[in-house]
Length: 33
Image 1 (cartoon, rainbow, N blue to C red):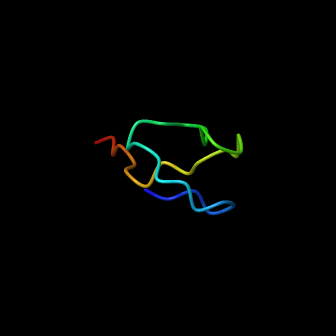
Image 2 (cartoon, rainbow, N blue to C red):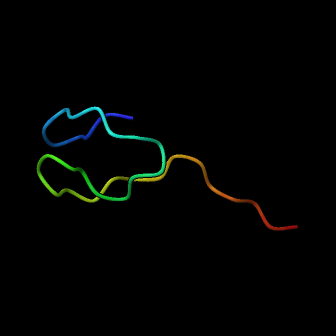
């Protein structure tokens, strides 16, 4: 996953960019049944 603001290569479980601090969207959404 890349940061939409600065392009930093973030890890999948990161909620914030380690470079610029932007909030990262979590693309994997849990589904409830």
